[in-house]
Image 1 (cartoon, rainbow, N blue to C red):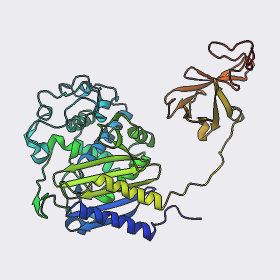
Image 2: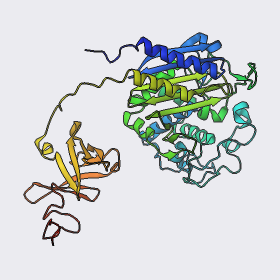
Image 3: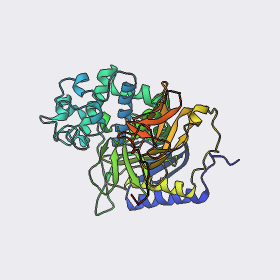
Amino acid sequence: MTSLNEELLPATRRALLHRVAVAQVEGRTPSLVAGVVRDGRLVWTGARGRGGAAEGIGAQYRIGSITKTFTAVLVMRLRNEGLLDLSDPLEKHLPGTGVGEATVAQLLAHTAGLGAETPSPWWERTPGTLRPELADVLGPQPLKHPVGRRHHYSNPGYTLLGSLVEAVRGASWEEALNREILEPLGMTRTTVQPQAPHAEGWAVHPWADALLPEPSEDLGLMAPAGQLWSTVADLCRFAAFLADGDERVLSAASMCEMRTPAAPCEPDGWDSGYGLGMQLLRMDGRTLVGHGGSLPGFVAGLWLSVEDGVGAAVLANATSGPLPGMVAGDLIRTVAEAEPSIPQPWMPLHNVEQELLDLTGTWYWGTYAYALRLAADRGVELEPLAGRGRGSRFHAQPDGTWIGLDGYFAGETLRTVQRTDGSVSHLDLGSFVFTREPYEPHAAVPGGVHKDGWRGREL
């Protein structure tokens, strides 16, 4: 049997190295490091240039706004523990901020209406001690747009979320991060402050091959928005977690929730959106999830194709170097196309209940034909038989109903309606009636079925 964890082929490895080498040259960055994770395992790393690249995957680079995804995971843990609800106004847990009715979910999705940046001076190049209080981060007019009306990326919004974690958890953001995410996932080289070996941040002159050192400031209250330093190896571990979850940190179901679009992004040439602390985009026909990051002297990208089981991390130490998100997307495409995932063998269901098997087959919503299929764990799948339609997967509930997991019927209840003799009359799905025949006579079709039935052209 072919192993699903075999190493990448030589031709694939060379193609990955070529892409990284081109990115380092064209991006004019002192160093660039990258890694690829497949099916949860680091399968390739590459490094070009000097400085941090000399240390390879062990060197730390600043990852900027990728930090936001870590902060979002901490917030989701609080939700899962019942300590807050995503629909809660921030003021319920963190009073006095002046952000009105902005909710936790809106802060996570950048739809709370907050400004993109702090008041002057430029927070990324100045010490956090200049902004000792949340009021210093938010300024006198924190809201730039009506709450919940549009997506507007906000760094101060994630400062608020970090302070929310501290208020509800009763521990500092850094303590919660280490205890609840980094330690369980074995991310020993991800830290708030740089630890050797680490790359130095540089600005590259736009019209000459000359370098200028960039400052590396402790961001203080802004840390939850962009403070972290990490390595390619650690970020690839994090990518595997974003794909599959980890019960010690956050479940697979919660990770799926974070990857679900919660807000559109501003038009920027990408087919993109934003979930709960995660950026989403379509690239080369596939959906990527993850986040980009930048701070003076550094750019970073962490992207993952859940469908392909492939992710990539790209780190560079130049303020305006290569576009790491595009490079990471190219690395994912290279692996996914050169070595597509080998599907798991088909296996029959462990148990098949006759009453569920009797429900499978063709059902009609009016004249639209659907197929109901039995899935694992008593789940079912409803899919249109002709063209595009309102298909969904459904998860079985203890009371004998099903709840939609995706598509048009996500969150809706599917139930069987029985006749007096116990046989199934029809399916009810969010008030839609599905019958075994199109407009089946005597069925409970809203509005009734004409007594004369179907007819030809001649009346």
